Length: 147
Image 1 (cartoon, helix red, strand yellow):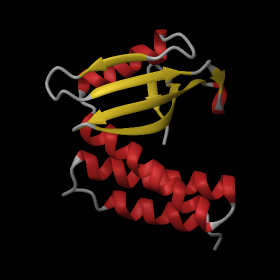
Image 2 (cartoon, helix red, strand yellow):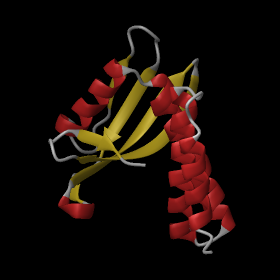
Image 3 (cartoon, helix red, strand yellow):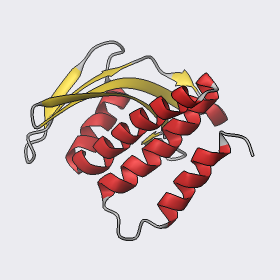
């Protein structure tokens, strides 16, 4: 079995046993699995796989735990109308979490979907966490974060 399949199988097993997991744990597990697959595909070694898993897990945790509906709406607005290279910021009125998002130019991704990458910095309890995201339009024109 190729090494790239091992993280995928682990992610599937984790996600299929998620009934007692919260949003942060589900997001972290899904992000870690996807990050491991991407890391292995890019670096073709264990170090790249572990780095991908760590980054993906962090992003999944942030999205699953910290981002509520308000934050996802703000992020969607940045993907939809944000000027490439220009940082947009907001503070969640309920949690106080601060976000800074710098979108990149749109491009045509897999399945001819319009996609856009962005650098996201979340300041949670005074600690900055930086991640890189990609969102693509779905069949209904909505931006969906890719994992």
